[in-house]
Amino acid sequence: MAARAPGRTGAKAVRAGAKPGAAGRESDTTLRKPDTTGRKPSTAGRKPSTAGGRKPSTSARKPGTNAHKPSASGRKLRTGGRKPGTSGRKPGTSGRNPAQRTRDPQAMRRRILEAATGEFATAGYGGARIERISRSAGTVDRMLYYYFDSKEGLFRAVLENAYEQLGAAEQRLRLTGVDPVEGMRELVAFTWNYYLEHPEFIRLLNSENLHRGEHVRKSRRVKSLSFPLLSILTDLLARGKARGQFRPDADPVQLYVTIAALAYFYLSNRYTLSRFLGVDLMAQTRRKRWLEHITDVVLGHVTPDR
Image 1 (cartoon, helix red, strand yellow):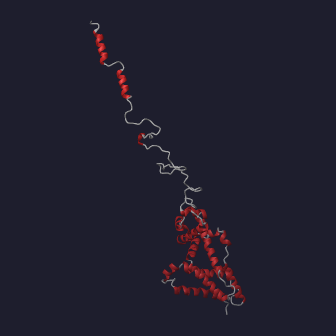
Image 2 (cartoon, one colour):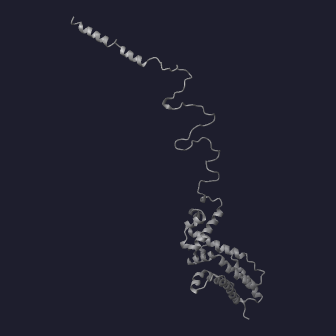
Image 3 (cartoon, one colour):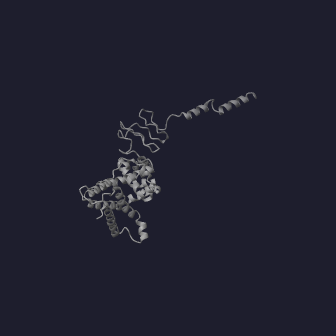
């Protein structure tokens, strides 16, 4: 009896612990309960999965289009939306600063020369600054070096341009058929008025003379330029000598220097002389009287003694 008690106890224990394997089967039943959530049986027409809160992927794009949205980096994906043959820039532009575009190289060169003329005339060769010239010309420093190689090359080009303009003005003088004495008067007046109306020319020459003419000496262009004034003066003297109006020994070169010196010195020293003499040398009456004086000096020199 005592020996069987444990068995009954064990049997009870077995019965109390439910049938062997029952717990496992109940557990399976819990996990495998029939689908009673109201979900329709799986069909071919079921809605696409929306797991993760994402909208279902669709392929309802219009034919021939690429519906990509811009990437997070802000750059648009290549969608083929550019016009053929374009790079996204406006036609005719290179992406450079407008000041760097030189569609008209000759116009750019002229602007640089004009700006450089003002700078060199104001500050001289030593005091002139490339950055001021480029700013005034509306361009950048490297364009000055592109066209003129260096500051020295630019100054030489400015001098050449100044001499060329003088020569062009002299070419417009028409004194061939004019009476020699009257022609001499007109030539003197031309020289005076040109210096008076082009003060930058005088200042450029002042700066070049400080450098002993080294830039003009290196210029092949200045050597090739024609300065008609000396030829005109020579013709006037020759015709005047033939008529007995001028001295036979009058020298055209000496006369040329005399005319230039009397006009140049007065205007180049007008500030210091006006202060020193206590008079305004640039007053209209003073200027008129000086032109008359130059003319009298020149004609007095070339006219033969009576």
